[in-house]
Length: 295
Image (cartoon, rainbow, N blue to C red; front, side, top):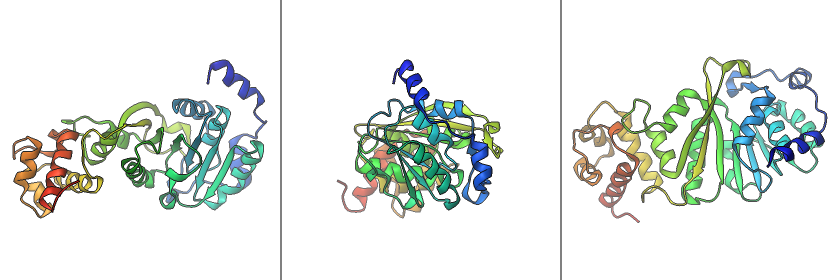
């Protein structure tokens, strides 16, 4: 959407009460048990929405909208259809008011996103844009990566907020301290880009850490052939004992690690953080062949 078009959309947006007023009126104190930190800075929510690109077509999926701060940003930036998945029943009335202000553009799904087939929501192209609850951010991402492994074009992109420490792991390169299992899985299926940091003071209540927004852009094909389930096993074994050499850490797979390491083309004395994504895929294929055939 061009800048002047965004301004036209903003001018036509309904007058909405301040988010702090909405939170007070509905008694929406953030709950630590749900990993809630509400983002109230509308400049930041607009920036996150714009980071997802053109949302005028298809479906934008948001997880954990809370009182609707980012939801407002998505709608104001021209998202044609937003599907918001909210687990906390206290937030549903506030979101219903927002849906009434944007007739036909906001659908609310009450439930746990871990139990929702997000890849089947709405019409494609689908984007996921979310300030993820910290306590379920990684499991949610892994489930969406599984959907991409099965159907690479199920999502156009994902723009997600994590604790900065998690974001650093997702974007880390081999040979760095932050490089690990979740980064291998994400980079195998997507181009992963760090976008920008969000300071703790932007949230209510402020978390103890800085947050980061990360963009995921699914590849037409994974970096190398592998089965997701096997790649998960191999990376879990390798990084589960990351200080040990592969010839030792891979023994938890209950197979001779030598053929797996040879397939990766690295010495048996190598450690997990030294291998790139393609090498891990080679080990996963070798493990499948050892277990009875891959493909």
